[in-house]
Length: 185
Length: 255
Image (cartoon, each protein chain N blue to C red):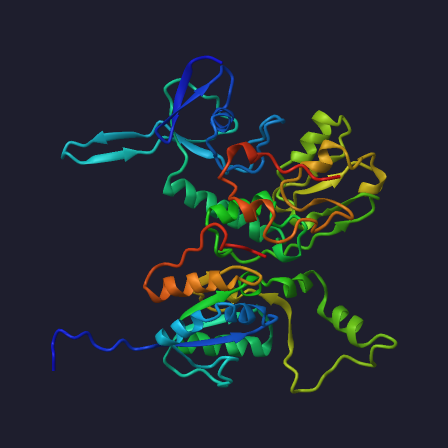
């Protein structure tokens, strides 16, 4: 064996999910366009809407999470990501400060559900099927529930911002965005 | 203008008698971050973003080590410039402190940029971009605040108020109307309107008043003028807030 040959670089395992988000960040992720071919040279996708794998492998390197935490299922998924991913990234406004879903935080959850589902012409009762995840009384950003390692702001972050952020991270640098790429909207 | 000068980050800045550090710096085209400062009003000194260090010293200890003794920290909007002063602004320490101040402001109010008409020209947002604020760091406060839409032309969204008092000062000093004031203390401090009902619609504020056009964030908004400039063409889409010190004053609203 040639001692000077570098060992083949292991591809990083990446998992992604959307919690209380709109999948806009995932759509924006696809805006990296043909650069996704460069990306898949460096990473494999594990649990993600892209692969439709339902649960994280235990050895994921990166977990990228869009959306805040608005219901009990979100909490479970977030804990699964934290348990199985070495590095977690909060992607987008909702993951970082709750975003638009968190604008319900000033209202009483029962009043909201009653206004939407239990008004004349809109239904007769608040849905209570046990399969429907229970809503939390407030929407929370991810870092209030688990430790988050990196934050990628934007609503959504642009494809260019996502690309810069991921390539920085994959190269071992602290991701920085700078003017034009850092956006909160 | 006198020929006196001081040093800001090692750059010589001329100043006239009576000018504060920030006034001299901005006149010389050097940007110092700030929120509650506005050239047309008396300095308020409350946001502390313009804090600088004055006259740090480097000394050599007995064992030959050089140690930097940090100078005093002062708000550059209220501190008079003095000849020969050495002022530091763009240091890692001050940038870190400023970033923390902005993060605290961002979690204290309800700052949801995607749904804010001021996004793209908001001073708080522009500063946060410039300081590289990627996360709120602190837990969100989720304060419960109201919206006042009682005025025919102006909407008040208290969710975004940073208590800079620019509207208070503008209304009192320039418009001579005293429409706004701050009330309460600590975390109950909030902006109020000077009318019996407490509603803006019952005050004599006009859309052309200075007070209606000075808000650095998205509290005082002109109705029927939201989102007029498309994404990508707004002020801070085009250039960072620190790019041009002359642009420092909040952009005048198109009325």
